[in-house]
Amino acid sequence: MIIDPKRDLVVTPMGLRVGGRVLPCTVGRGGITRHKREGDGATPVGHHRIVGMLYRPDRMARPRDWAKPIGPHDLWSDDPKDDDYNMMVRAPYHASHERLRRADPMYDLILLTDWNWPYAVKGRGSAIFIHQWRRPGYPTAGCIGLSRQNLRTVADFVGYGSRLIVTDCNHAPRK
Image (cartoon, rainbow, N blue to C red; front, side, top):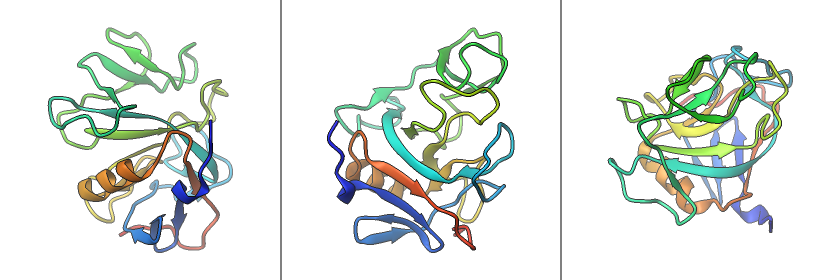
């Protein structure tokens, strides 16, 4: 995999730096942390590689050639006790999980990072996605949230292996 630092995304106190622009974004309700754990609502510090892109084919055209469609049975395991913890799974599914095909548009387009993946440490926290925010300033459960338009801009900008860089900041981006 060839890494192009010009395609990195950097969370700053002002927002998400994408190339020469800074886009408004939200982070987890628990702020930014060096000690991520399941359910804390925090966004983990680190260099997280973009390892996938998922999209709703019933709501948008395929955004990139490497994007994979989200089907009606696609889920994400968030149960630290489960063997498939922090992995994409399919319904019906017995353990705690999150639906990827949602009624709202929040997961119409998802950039997947390698946070605690592919070999998850149980309880360290499940997926950190880059996805559409609920509304400006409204925190996520630990992911990075962007407006729909800015999420599309980011999807066009990144490549497989681009990094999402999250550092300790005194002020988490909120608006």
